Every structure is written in structure tokens, then in C-alpha cells.
Image (tube, rainbow, N blue to C red; front, side, top):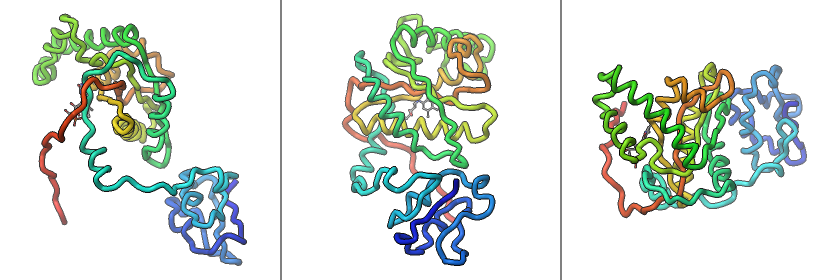
Length: 272
Ligand SMILES: Cc1cc2nc3c(=O)[nH]c(=O)nc-3n(C[C@H](O)[C@H](O)[C@H](O)COP(=O)(O)O)c2cc1C
């Protein structure tokens, strides 16, 4: 199924054809209405921009009409609100014990679903792990891997002060998951070349979405490094064959609220 056009509504403005990344819609037709080119099925990347852009709702894409898509009629955040969202997000390392509602996590993942992905491949899968017992078990594996790194790869462990992470863990301080009630792991097919970027962008969306909803997140970098190298952790994660993790995000209710925006390096840019 390709695209169909309601000729009563279509104004021949060409927006569907102009917005198509794969150039699979032509206006070069007998009646001047848009139509799929030969090979549409194979070449269309299913981004549905043609459906999303049509001002008159004339286009049906693969059986889906304009009424089946949410309208984009709400106001955009003001520049001040956008600045607050983007600059105000912080990595949260102190969480309240209370877990998030499942529906809240679903809402965050629903937003992260709109992250871009190469060729619109949308390869991201999520594994959400909740509860201290399960997270402590995973953290033990991460710490075991860190111990291995300290002993066998001092060239990596020393600059990252990995020994301190082990010491903290032994003193009952969780620098792996920071006491979070939830960890959202983004995983995808190892063989898909779009997987790394798609997962990282989705995780960034997730963290920003959490902040936007008054919640907090933080990248679990040690977890992800261990998940890529440490067999016992991989076994505990039990991902489907061929899948690998590309990042983990702690999620929960922050204990504190930040009062100001910390400094960051100046923009490094070359203009040509
Ligand atoms: C890939 C990646 C891995 C990270 N790993 C950790 C981590 O393991 N533990 C942690 O507390 N913070 C981690 N962070 C958070 C960074 O330390 C944080 O983004 C940085 O200090 C800037 O602070 P901000 O996020 O509040 O602006 C990680 C961030 C990224 C992007």
C-alpha cells in the first residue's frame, strides 16, 4: 500500500513530494496530483512526513489518514521555557525511595520514541529494571568488572579513579546507580549500523523528558561499559540474541532541586 490522495482536498501544493526524504512521491502525473513512484514500497522509509505535512489532510499513507494522527496545534514552548528545559536539566544523583508509576515511565518512553533514527529504522528497545534488590544485583556485577579493570587495565582504571568506585561500593555507597529506583536500558541489534546513535539520542530524549515532567535521570556509564564487556552482567541482563546495550538511564524523583545553571565550556565552533 502506498499513498492515496483525496482529490477534493488536495491543492497540489507539492508539500508531500517536497518533504519526502526518499523522493518516492511524484507530482509528474497526468492529473497533477501526487502519486507514489515505482518502487515506493521498497524505498519509502515510513517516516510519514507526507501525511504529517499536508495542510488540508488530503493524503492517506499506507492506509493511515490524517484523523489517525495527533494534530500539531499546540503552542511551542517560549524561548525562555526552552532555555529552562535544556539548560536546566541536570544529572540527578540523589533519588527519593518512592518508585515511579509504571504509567509515568511509559509516558517518558513514549516521548523518547520520537527521537530521530537513521533511515527511520527505530531500532531502540527498552529494558526497565525496578527495585533495589534487582539493581543491587546488577551493580555487584558492574563492581566486579570495575575490580577487574583496576587489576588488569590500570591505564584505563587509574585516570577514571575506578578504585574509588569499588571502595565506595564496599562502604555501602552506590556510585553505579546512585540509589535510583529504576534503570531504563536502551538496547538494539548489534548488527544494525543505526543502533548506537538511535539509542544514545533516545536516552538523551528520555533524560530531558524526565526533567520536563519534574523527574530526574542520570546516565549509568559504568553500567553500560560493563554491560558491553562483562559476561556475568550480560547473562543477568538476558537480552535477546544479537542485541547489545547502548546505554542505561537512572530514573526517579529527585531529592533536591537545582537553583541555578552551572557554567559550561564556551561553544567550540568553526564557521566557514
Ligand atoms: C555517556 C555518559 C555516561 C555517564 N555516566 C555517568 C555515570 O556513570 N555516573 C554519573 O553519576 N554520571 C554519569 N554521567 C553524567 C555526567 O557526569 C554529566 O552529564 C556531566 O557531569 C554534566 O552534568 P549535567 O548532566 O548535570 O549537565 C554520564 C554522562 C554521559 C553522557
